[in-house]
Image 1 (cartoon, rainbow, N blue to C red):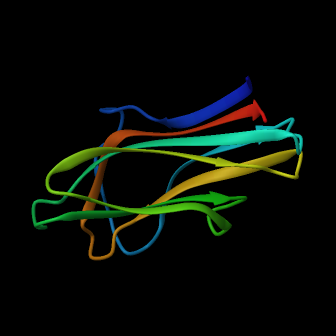
Image 2 (tube, rainbow, N blue to C red):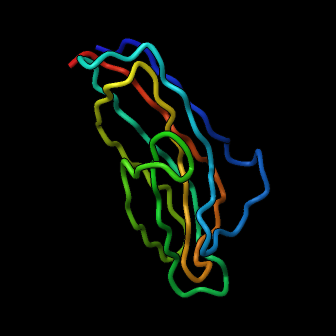
Length: 128
């Protein structure tokens, strides 16, 4: 059963698409509180992205970090695309603290990705 949730992000068309390079970029973050050890946290992400015209294949590394942009990596994946794609990922975790911040970051070695939107980080707190 969902106890509560929080989400943060940007809709398609609400920002100018931007290239992602070798340095990790923060897309968004969220704060969850009123947590108990008996709770399960489900984090969902959605990222609309494409490859720059100069690349044959797009490549994007996606990370969810705990605490801050340099914090522990909760989830990591590397995605590829031939033109454009909407990546959706769901990960489940637990938390011993009564609150936690999660940060959605991306990077692309060789600048082989552009964020075009939408992007979203949603955290749901559930009973186990």
